[in-house]
Length: 307
Image (cartoon, rainbow, N blue to C red):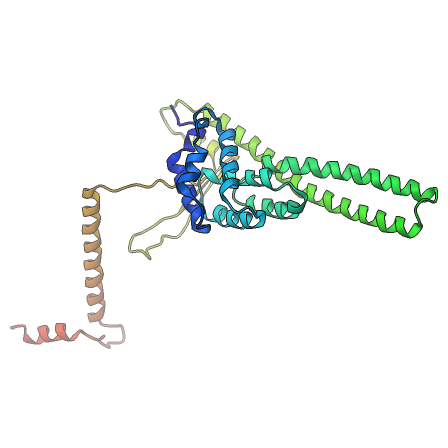
């Protein structure tokens, strides 16, 4: 049975995540954070509840200053690629909806979206913006009525109505940006559903056919081989239909003693071949008849070699 997503959030993964946070915020208490997250309720929590539990405890142990906490999370989310980063936008939902943090939260969501979906975080902000837009409509109507009956001067009416309209315009622009994030998430979800349907279609097969590949694969990009490390590395990107390129999560493989020894021998063999090639190239005669420099030790050996 495949591992549940919620079980991927475990002590080992939380420790890796907490150490990344500590690298950006030295006072972060790694073990205390983990123990606080994985309390007596942890085993009964589903994925989204575990996500919220992590966010709550980030709030406990990051700086009280919201701006400082966001700066730290900016560094974490851009340097760490694992399931835990999908929890980071939730920090904004819990701690960033106050009016004084509003602009900071909007900017953070725009940056965080590059690394993790903010769809669940965005919706409360859209609702709050829409509520404020409605309030501004009512305030504008009230000032108009007061101006019409002479309770409010034309000058004051112009000041207030201009401020209301400006704030409304800003809020509508924010909502357009936030709504595009939601729409993008919905579109991606629909594509993911179609891909999953395709996967279910071929859960039991004995032969990989060309038609199956065509259904799954949109295109394959093969890059030039890289030998800079002494080993040939070939990058290949496979773009699947509906979901695009898929990056296989990195899995740390610990080699056995036999594999380490075999790799050492391969490295020695490559080094010998490089050394031989350098010597061979040094003794080669170029096309115009000029002999390249021969190493003194080799030249001496050539002179003393018996006929």
